[in-house]
Length: 411
Ligand code: ASP
Ligand code: MG
Image 1 (cartoon, rainbow, N blue to C red):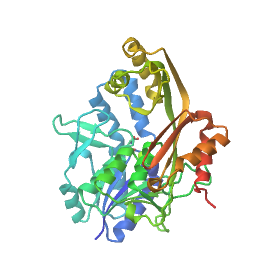
Image 2 (spheres, protein in one colour):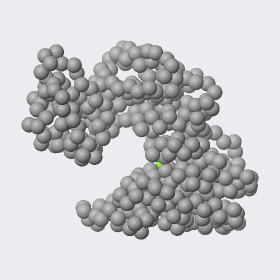
Image 3 (cartoon, rainbow, N blue to C red):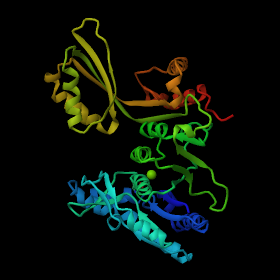
Image 4 (cartoon, rainbow, N blue to C red):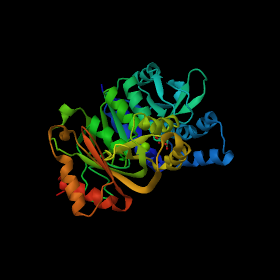
């Protein structure tokens, strides 16, 4: 008998009609004889509203109370879906994180799952009861307080539960019918991928594609949870299309480039005439790391005078002001002549495991971008991806250009 986790995102449970539609998807699987555990998000917009309420209550709120407040959105959708399922004659009950329990670290607003006791859920499933689990939340064992997993965290709840109850598959129901070669709103010729490897999906999610929370993909990879992304808006009785996130050996037809991701949430910092001596990079980046600022692309120019050099790097745009302030404070210690920053930049990336075995993949992109008059500010590469930093104004043109030169456009 198949054991399934079905995860429904915020737009899928946004109102009673949608919750009823979700229930029909669940009924289909139950009727087919599957054991079903469901993970739900809060209704669309609910978490934003709860976060805003915390901010309105105080600028300096206790993070444990923030968790208590924002975790409530998922509790509501889990309860409502259980009620609707029961009304359809399907045995179901709601579960909150602490009732399972889903144990997490304590960090308020950004806890990590440390372990899940799967037996309670397995027992419910064996008793033919659908388990409707509130995503995004858990409990810290030491403090006994409710915790939340960071925005988008119910994807991670779903994958972690799938691993804990040894589900055959984790279906992620969202508002799009799968993972696309790039954002179809930017490139109408984007195609849905039938399959994508975990590694590629991880890069795509980290580099800006918003289908699944990055951590959930990481977890699916480590725990080898087979994940399928599909739309909850599809007719529950109709044919289903989606994207299977799988192992490399399950990929039938391998392209060199699988997808193009982009992120406008980038800022560039350049330090001019930095002393060219050991220890300088550490003096720049250690204080940023200590402040929890994630540095992404780093480019150091080989100096011609061997006395000074220029260093360029990027941070998330939300960290831009903080990063600049830290560097200005440490100016004397680091020893640089000038600090320049730009927040109107974007990162465009091409991803594909086929890059491992093909040379010159990135070079084609550099040529195509230059022909469009797009200047590249910085480049980074890894085994299965490369990224370019460009002026934000050119984001869409660059994404379309790369999508087309790598043969991803729909015919
Ligand atoms: N409701 C939470 C959020 O909006 C978690 C989730 O939907 O995955 O971030
Ligand atoms: Mg989500």
